[in-house]
Structures are given as structure tokens and as C-alpha cells.
Length: 92
Image (tube, rainbow, N blue to C red):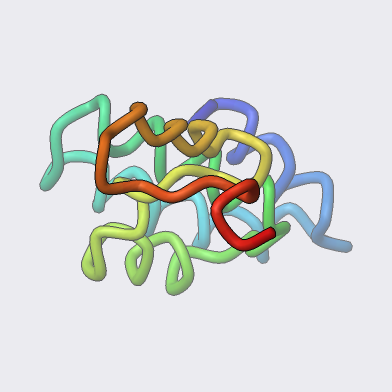
């Protein structure tokens, strides 16, 4: 995902020099955090199209990479049957 993010940044800039600086910032941050967090942060940045090193750093700094992406959420658990839980028939 990190490679895809770097490619997207380079493709989004009119001049390669503009993309190099952002890519170097991301690679610098990648040395400070574990690779699994960098990959999740890259996936998040790609999903939301935040193609700059500042947004990438913010994702890592605020632990947003730990949150599920939209569409990745786990389904809510169904409540187990219990004697204190009233069903729809109780109110009729």
C-alpha cells in the first residue's frame, strides 16, 4: 500500500520535483513507525485521497490507522437470548 501511495502522489503532481518532497516525507515517517502501521496509514490515505506527507503523518500521530476503513467495519453482534430481554410480543 505504501508503494501505491507513493505512485499516486507522483501521478497527482504536475512536476516530479513536487512529488519527491512528499514521498521523502512519507519515507522518513516510515522509519519511525512499525511497517504494519505504515501500511494501514497508506491504505487510509489512499482511500481518502489525502496524497501528502502532512496528512500521512497526521494519520499515524492520531492513531487513525488503527480505525477500520469505511466498509471494513465488523457487523454488530446480535444480542443473546436472555430472560430479562422483552421481545415485540411483550408489548401487545
